[in-house]
Length: 282
Image (cartoon, rainbow, N blue to C red; front, side, top):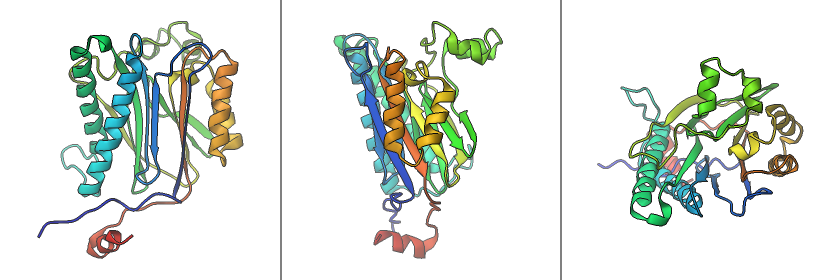
């Protein structure tokens, strides 16, 4: 007898998600692309790069591919499975594989379409399931977390500047003021294969997560991002608008995008035959 999984229970009411993107004060086009799906608990942000409008093409391909593939996989697969070899949960593997597929599509498009030559995009994405958050990223778009009083950057930039910090050439404070922050060492679409960095961490009720393009963190100090989330955290729309306003007030030299998540309640996965039968009718 074939197993029927169906989509996981919606996270509406358990998680609040908001996304906002702005062209900024200098650029003519917005090459960032974002998406949120409150039913799936999926957040995606891509910061495109390349001549003409090719960056917009790359980021658009990345986000659309990831959203579609994650949605399809979550509807047909058992999300409670853990891979015995890697110990990764099924949501993390789905997210990684979707990003890997997006990389191949962008790479092939860049090679076959002259107007798209050299395009690429960063990606930072998160998938919420079973009181966990799977985080996957490539490049220097970031994910921050506010838990209680502690605000921290969870992802590590794939950038030349971060490598210099890791090797002791810069302190984190000096890196914040460095002139050339934007040379990424890893991006989607640049090579045929890409290494996706994955993390899985438990979520706590009350957590806030901030995904952003470098148009935010290049223009706004981490302490000011923290203060904004801490002050307006129960109104994510206000947080998003205020963060973008801060970036633009400080110069707005790049497109700026933020995607926000607030954990309102726990969301354990259904397990067992009885729970699955209930899930078919929910």
